[in-house]
Figure (tube, rainbow, N blue to C red):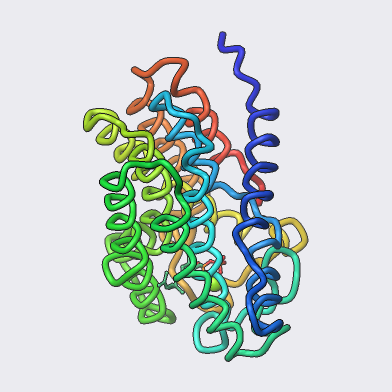
Length: 295
Ligand code: FPP
Ligand code: MG
């Protein structure tokens, strides 16, 4: 039996991520931009991506704090993508992380610009605010993040998602959307943490397999929660996929088969990193957390 205390681990990691996010935002001018950036970045959230990044770095034997600027960068990219996703031109959503969406408070123009500022700050975090990390590692992280944020990643997935609204979508297309829109950044979180720690190629490859599976499982669970949970618990509008006529895993496979698919993926993810034994404990527990989460 492992003596790993995941609850304590998660609480500690969340606290240090919150502090680092707060410290990463400076006295930006004008006030409205500063407030809009802080409003969304510091709105709570599970902080799953930065924690995956820190845990992957820790798995290499390196101090996870060294990956903190990269972890912050990843949460900035994620937050930026949510601000833009909620805009009237995209999902037109009113509620995010339990409060009104950024554009509802600051207006569309500031929301777009706050998102842009977070995206560019992310690259500043890695390139200028990651002390004592060899530049070759930082360059690999920057390359990973630029691919993930752009057309080959989030943007491509989001465009396909928007294009498919109201249409009949097959499983392949749905998987394309999820892999790009959500899976890519989850995978980058894990891979970038390992890159900062200077992981050997064998570990990086196993982590890519792990992250591919948790990325898809995460989104299947998201689709399930959209149907089975409430806006109060989720902190965002529940039932939105049905209203927007989006194709989801529950719509294509039903709830039970969707749950089974997510379980199967989590099993595969865990198998990929099991050989690292106790070093893998945080990432193994995070895989279980993804499937058991209620928000
Ligand atoms: C939420 O999905 C949206 C995303 C995971 C990503 C959206 C991506 C963009 C807006 C492109 C961002 C651009 C760059 C450059 C990074 P959802 O609508 O299914 O989930 P929700 O219920 O949380 O809104
Ligand atoms: Mg949305």
